[in-house]
Length: 273
Length: 273
Image 1 (cartoon, chains in turn cyan, blue):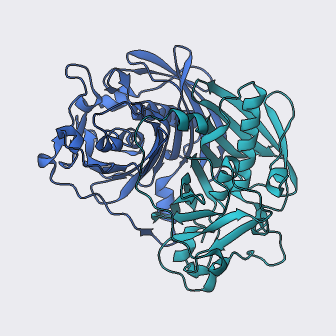
Image 2: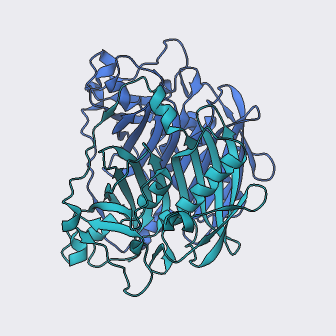
Image 3: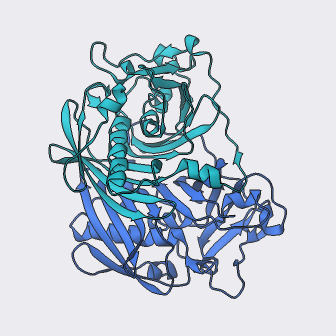
């Protein structure tokens, strides 16, 4: 059992309701990371599908979360779920994740079966994207905690940024792109459930435009899981294409060790200056 | 009053419930277009916010819909809404749109105030994207109905494709990108509420890879509204980056006549061969 699996575990707590507990091990600053919150909600939705007898749709193909309030570390979590439709190919479900009676995220997800999709696929394949070129992990920059001494999610992770990630060394590139290797520090291999975490684990790409890092809270994050990741470190790249009136998009790609695009993400976030 | 406003009108029908009616004027083939369905749901969510006394968050900043079943034209619509949170800057609300007792889409949206965001923005702006280069509308290709004689949404719209849109002339480019001008045929100007429609109104970009057009149903569509559009035709471009195992993404940009990026979209869709 891994730290990630332990810290996103959910337990049945009544009809359509699941309990979890946020540790402080996935904090950014003093708050649980948004990807950690989303991964916990996805695990609850997946568990609800199984609890309702659906074993045909194990994989979260498209997951959207709207972030309502920051999460609280070292505190209990309630996830209320509602099945919307179980069809042949897809199952759609929503969830609200709360702590202390206050909603933290609202989520909506469609689950399916990546293996069945692969087996049944008859049409063409075409990818215009390429994995980001990253130097050997040994020459990349390890992500440091924002505040030394405080718990940080990056202690549980392998987070190795491309050496061109200038904001870490005080030489921002002026181009809102950040790339790097991601994985779990305890050797747990990536799977579909961890992709929502990895889709929101890198420092914001917009840091490359800023004099100093600021707070970039997510308003909405959507993750498309496109394939089951192979074992090994993930190659990731995140870009902000449009920063305007204090709002920004961030698009991400997550590639596995066999060169497959395993997740695509997009979020709308706010830049607090 | 415009055709679009008429055909997406909603009326209060009890607590948190709204009624609408899908005409056949926004059909693709024999079904209502997914953007038309979403625009109707967004109008209901906007109306619910107002009905609950919230006049601070008129603009749909981020809207996600999961498509559960095709819509039915010439038929009544029920939209059930649920307010999730009204905060200072944002209001979050969900909706389920049904016809004949069957859910057609589940939606989740965050509303805000584009004018207030613009007024209060203190930080930098940066856009790495450029509007698509489009020839003069007079030299673009008017979108023809899929089946001559049947009603088509394109009769209500100005849909002028870049002449390089090869699938229309039997010379597909092999590059999954389609661009063109979009607007309303009756001269109604674009606004934030029509952007979800325009984000799903162009033919699928993946047609440029196919021997012949097929059916590309949307699984999930997210639209970010980034600015209030100026009057005039919109410049749009849509690209599929990753087609794999019968699923594909499609990313879109919608630009207004003053060169502002007014909407970004991404969908996960299925390719039926």
